[in-house]
Length: 167
Image 1 (cartoon, rainbow, N blue to C red):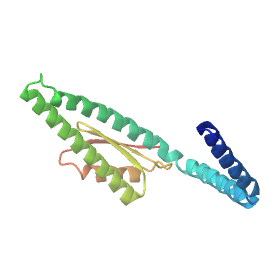
Image 2: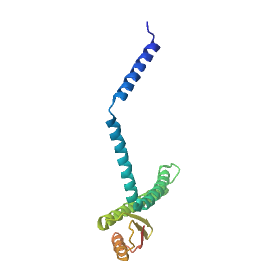
Image 3: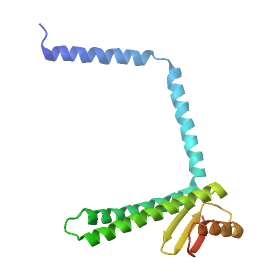
Image 4: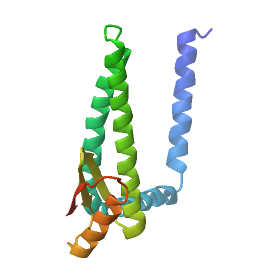
């Protein structure tokens, strides 16, 4: 009589044997198509890397700003969740969170407007009354910068100090 270990060994060995025979008898065309698919993907990645070099700087700036803001929001959230803080401190933290979210929304709105109107990728950062815009364009055009500045200013009620940089 076969014990449990012997039965498991026989079952796994037969499974490995069947799979290895299947692998050996498979046509080579399947492997060749997989290899060509992989080379096509690699060339597509290289092309996309060349195209995205302009936007990589802008994306890096966006990621840095998002991480900075998320840290600030987390610290404000800790103040709100703290039981040792007064209601005034919690209210002030909540108002700061609302203001940060409003600024983020306005910055995204401006970046979308620039993308729609000028077909350019843009990074927008607002601090107090200063707005920094970085546009992904190789051409440093003064008239384009002026148009972008007017577009950005149209989003604000008060006069803002706007700087436009080209990357």
